[in-house]
Amino acid sequence: MTALALAVAQPVAYRGVPGGATWQAGDFAAAYQEAIQVDTAAAQLLASRAATDQAVYLENESAPALAWLNRATVAAQLSHDLDPTGPLAAAATMAAARAKGEAGFHQGAFAKAFLPGELQKLFERALELDPDNAYALVSYAAWHFALTEIGVGWLFGADRSQVLPLMERGVAAAPRQINLRVEYARVLFALGRRAEALEQVDTALALPVRTAADRFEQARARDLPSSP
Image (cartoon, rainbow, N blue to C red; front, side):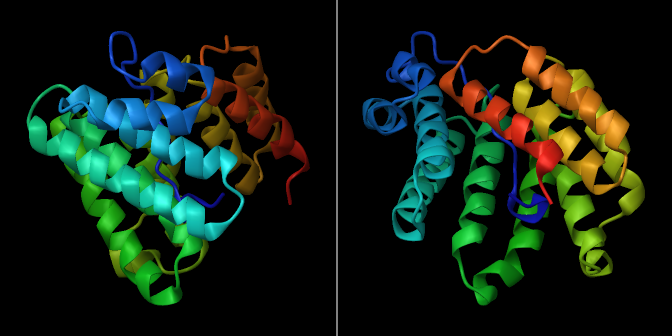
């Protein structure tokens, strides 16, 4: 997983939302089918999360992954349209960013050329709606890192000095979110700050697992120290 294509997953309110318990248990496809039928911002947000989780955690081939990510994008947009300035609007914006970012792994060079600018707009929109949105902060940090790492940051205004401050703010805003710790660790490893990265890995592995997605993220954390 590269930062350029990543907008980190965020928790969604699953209690009382159709498909929520199914998503929590890890049957992402079934959770999507339950949630997508309900015309509320919360249900569509959960449908988007479930579809992206299916693509990211369970699909091994590009064609089915892209199909799920397209569903996720549509559901995220509908969630936003149902309540464009409400409490879930920033989360819906980030759900769209995550789906579009993950789709970048499976798309050609032409589509990828537009991805950094598109993601930047979504991150900035999410932060306008919710300046303390942990997932937007961490994702935007990853965006700054990826673009400067490959030497094209100047094209989009990416700034290496923004990476760690944004990461730190994001993790501080949601300190018990496993995936944020994992993403922070990944960037620290890439920056050569191994001791700090290992601290984040240890924290991610010590946090309580509340969902199937948390288990997948802890597995990713275990792999980080040996990743190239």
